[in-house]
Every structure is written in structure tokens, then in C-alpha cells.
Length: 385
Image (cartoon, rainbow, N blue to C red):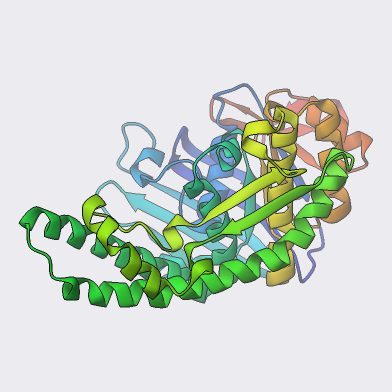
């Protein structure tokens, strides 16, 4: 298979004591890869392994030790990629109680954050409905995940902001318990919050100017142009500099013993025809909105990085009916040139649909952490990889 200068393709995935896999090696030769099998077979774990290689962390949990096979003390993931026509080998390994080690072409990163953006990727799972129905933190995480893949300075500002926020909140609690208060103690942290918060606000504002023209056409195409979607970015900093906002909110911060204004309170208002999506949108509308957000994220990453990101779709039929899945895969075939990974609980449903759309693919049956490539020419018979 030929790989273009804008492509990122995973050609080989190796797992050692990762989640349910004692050991596994899978080689991929097609632009579309299907992982098929019953619930609990290990399909989603394969997607999470790929996510680790892109982001150095799990999509589903924050504690790396949870990814180690039960009863074991260590695990590792290795991926061989073709990126822009050049080979890349990424390995991620960790032991219980020790720090995680990430290597690119056998050279260890000094900071994990330096890896973010090398292998841009988008994941869509049934858990993503929290982006629509959950709190503002979920929507900020979506924006941060996108911008961190295209801007190393943004990620650095975000890390510095969160560290300053943690220190300021700890001081507010400490001062509250001591019964004495000296505002000068907070000044260094107020300065850092304002410095990094203003940079975050500037880049988030610019993001939506570029993102909305991508998102709206995607939603209209997937929904049949039935309603008009909108996303409104809300931030305290739209009312003035963050340094002023922090001074104004200080009396309230002292009472609550936490910082109540800043980039960590930003919100996205999601609407259809002027009505709040979370309250008034149907399940179908909410799912279409979610899928459109992720596909627009894919387009944004492509435009900003010059690379075709990897796309991972977990359990499509949990979110969409047959016709919506058909429309989604048709859209992906028309607009996405990067590698696609799909999971499904039915062995032949997705392959049959891909075949009907003329999309080249390969299918793997996953059964209790055993991975076997299905032979398309033999109508679903299994051949050992």
C-alpha cells in the first residue's frame, strides 16, 4: 500500500500485558480496519492502545495502573507508523508505582507533552454523550484536546494555568483555615493565572472562528439540513481582563475557598434553532450534534496540521441507527483520507456496509483477547495472523 505525505497509518500494533491482552501483535495493511466481536472481547481496548500511542494516556481512565493486565506489574504498547511517508516507532510502557516512559524511535521523551500532536487522532465512543449532556468540563476538554494537538504553546499555557490554579486554590483554603488574610500572598498566582489565562482565551476564541465554518456544514449534511446548529463560546474574559476579574471575585473566592473566575470556568452553549440542545434536543439530534463535533474536529486537525488524522469509531450502532451509520461512513469516505478503525459487536454488519460503499478494508475477529484476521475472500472464515 502507498502512503501519502499527509497520511498517518498504523501498520503494526504490539501489546504486552495491556488490559485483557497477555500479548498480541496485529499488522494492518488497509486504510479501514474493523475490530469485530462480542461485548467484553477486547475491541475497545485496542482503540485505547492506539489512543495511548497518540496522547500518552488512556481515553477512558486517568490511572495508568488500571491498564495493566490483572495480576501483573507492568505493561507496554508499541506501534509502527508511516507518518508523512516516513517510519515512526512509538512505545509506551509503565510499571505500577513508577513513571510512564514514552519513546519515539527508541529515544525517550523528556516531557510527555512534547509528543502531543505528532500523531493527531479523533476518537468517538458511546461515552462521548457527556460532551452534550455533562458539565462544562467535558466541553472544555474537547476544545483543549483539539488545540493541544495543533499548538504546543497552547498546551504549555494550559499546563501552567492549571498548576497556578491548583496553587491559588490551595492558598485560599489555607488562608481560610488560618483566619487571617493577606491578599499579597495571592498576587504571584493571580499574575500567572492572568498571563496564561489570557493566552488560553485568545486561542480558544480564534479556534471557534475557524471551527464553526467546518462544524455547521457537517451537521447539516448528516441531519438532512433540518435545523440550524450553533455553538456559543462563553468566558469571563469576554467581560474584561482576567486580572480585573480575579480582583472583583476575590471576596467570593475567600468565602468559597476556590477560584471562581477564569479559563477553567469557560463554557460552550450548544443550540439547535436557538433552543438548548441538552434540554430540548431529541436523542437523534443530540447524537448527530456529537458526531458532527467530532468530524469537524477531524477536519480542523487536518487543516491545522497538514496531516490526515486517525479516526476511531467505537461501537457505532450504540449511537446510531442503520441509516445514520450508512450516512456517516459515506461522509467519511468522501471527506477523510486518514486511517479509520471501527468496532462492532456483529461480525459481518460493518464489513458488508463497507463493501457496499466500495471502501477497502480489513476485518479482525476479537474473542477473549485473541485476534484473528478474517479472510474477506472466504466469506468470513478466519485465518490466524
